[in-house]
Length: 418
Image 1 (tube, rainbow, N blue to C red):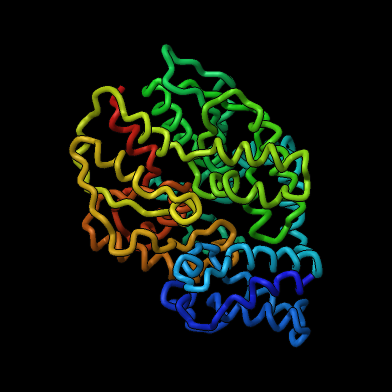
Image 2: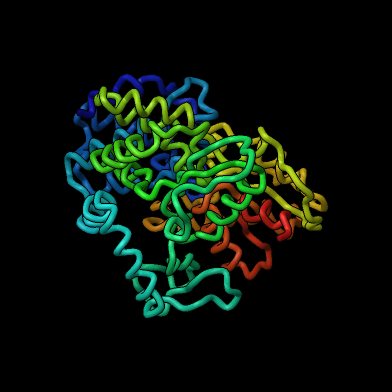
């Protein structure tokens, strides 16, 4: 019920602090694009002054990155991330999800085996619709297909990361034993990043479990208002990971880590059998940079001679609180100069399905990020979330820049010369 959201809505004091930090408002300048305006819309729906089933209402609610910048700056402590997520859930329950979204989320994500098979076929058939980008950083559409002709995307790997490795990878005299929650993008689009994470863990004497039965974290479903599918994903993950005899569950994706640490207990609060497991999993989950910063990088590192700038992925820095550890690790690599952006925490505009629904808007948002990157004179930009890597790479491609865009794990792994 919309009335269930009223308790959070009334906390907004209409000060407008969110306007100064909202990337969407910066581009559109419309009150409906900022948190305060969306809260007014939700309040109107609660009172019955606005038809929540109208197409315009849903469109306006979709224009949010869920980056958390407004929440971070709100003097009243409005939990806008949770408020908007619950509003989208309510809207999906009233109107239903669009057919394509429903098929992808409920038919694809809920069935792990079907999901895997579909991506395996996709890795074969993608060459009919996409071509290699000239610089080899990804693929570009051959024909208009609902994607902008110039958009750079990552190819689906013909061999997923998890299929390359046994479930148990032991090291001699381990410092820690962890389980690796790979997430969908690393498993299927960026397996090389998974290899980098695994290399770093092994070289620093960490034994690794890679459960074959793991699945999506459910973030795409939750951000689109499909709470039922997100709950199924959460149940699957806690069943797979919570009981493992490991020191930690490691992630290398800001959004996956945020789901495991923060969202799973909320999603499973009404399921006592799973709620306790979700709390156990939340306490165990850490980003791989937290683990490596804690145990320290061991062995001799190769001098890289790079000027690097670091992008704070929204869900990694704001929801998980991981800020210093990646910088500590990057700064420990010989020859690496860390040049900070003016606003390293500014959202890049990727935000999962947001950049699919609102690509032109997301392009404008990433342009602000690129301006910050260029101002540092860095030759390499590093991020801790695969979606950020893909979206910033697209922005680099659109602007004809030569800046390398890497996941944090990939750059650190380069310092371990084999």
